[in-house]
Figure (cartoon, rainbow over the protein chains, first blue to last red):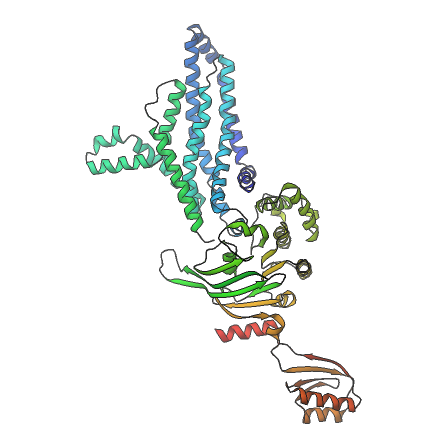
Length: 270
Length: 308
């Protein structure tokens, strides 16, 4: 019960800080743009044209829309969610607030896990709204009901959870919202994309085996949200997924971040 | 029965993030708080009072020593079900209303919905905040926040309540009301652990006190024992004439204040009784005899200055 109270307090905070409202507004805007797009004459014509070439044509068009939607959602999550949830931990740690929280009969482990679960559930529900509506609109319009598109809710939530675990650790150590955002964005937008293309780009320039080893090492231990995004796209398009290694290693990274957060929080004096 | 007992409790802090220098916030602190008493902790700023409370509540970790609350080592959080706490400068989520604050912290204390709702009304009435229950707390004054904080600390019907500066920002009437609430809690058998800078207030409501200075316990005991340091007895009598006053002044160790008031400055009971006999022989009625006490504030200032 106490765990649920803590978890839902994250929701209340999100509502109070207009985070939910912001996500709802952005999601609604995207849904409306989609509604508008698939109702304009040129797109309707495209649907008719694809339809005339059989169900395969419709399917390709729907999948194309859905993949575009995944990429938009991914960017939306990274930018909007980072900024909105990054304040959860620093605000919890404010003097006068943390004292009271720690005086209650709830372990520090549960506090961290409740904050994590609350943030993840918040994004999960927001994505159900966004992805669910887009799926419904596309399916009703095209008649092609691609269930695999709905799986992306889970994959996008997982990507968020992995990055959120970094935000929690940085927030606990620095007690700074701004630093949490900067470090997380740096890892996700700079470090991870560079490491993801290390074989194709960097290794063609850097031939030193030690440097290559170091880059490979960091690639495997750091999260791979862009790779998970590719896996999501492959699942929607029906293409084979060569390896789920990016998922396993990213989940392990997330667990390591959460463990470190709990360990740090347990030892810290407030 | 002891509700709190500590033995050789110590806390060391690093003086900075990258410094190896240590600051001793608590030094072998040993004390006990008995069930049903109001216990006050006093000390100048930086004496270690808040650190002590935070260690007892598991907010800060001890470096060494033993702590027992309700006769059990505080290794798990279960003892916190029976505890209430009002931190100094508490900060509730400002997007909540008064009753939402109580609901949230009541739930965190392990209470069920029905109990929280019932107790919310009861305690908001007690601290006279009932009419503000639906108002967002960002609109509350400092005094209102203190009252709400006090209600929060009592909500789960705790056996032991820690109050860190409970009357901070509260006007004199509000302070009197808070004192009444604390006395009421005491009469209900609750134990109260109080940290306050207002020594007059501590003197009025605490049964026992401990004085901390630089992390070390410098004095502890019952308030009346600690403050009863004077050898002076103040006599109030009926009107006395010049002759009696002169005799008191010359034959007994007295200081005359007026013709119906004087102070006898000795602990010699035989001489004091002889003086009382003399007053009666001269048909002077004794209206009151009060042993003069040093105020807690004077005692505290003298003690801390002598320490420093």
